[in-house]
Image (cartoon, rainbow, N blue to C red; front, side, top):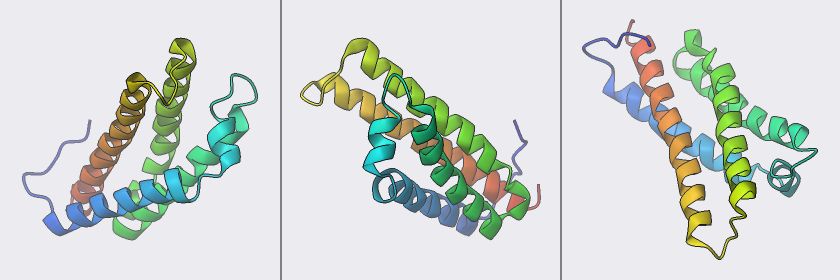
Length: 135
């Protein structure tokens, strides 16, 4: 875990958080095709749609890092891995327990998935702001 400086740029942190929120909206809801959404949740043949989806996320993270702290471009690879793990775990749990949209548990799982992505993005934003502040 990187050591955080005592002070980091509030402006950079706010920009990074805002950009990650916009990136997540774009990647998960605006740019995710039906092929990606349905394909990544299949029990077989899920790898290519999942890779396509998480690549969109990773490219967004790469662009944010290059804009704010180019030395943190490696976060795109971390995003690829973490996002893939979160999405695949959600799919496995959804299949295991046969959650349907009519059940509260389906929405709890969906909310947990989204929260894990936002917490990941918050950590990325802190790392970027710390790196840009001179750590």
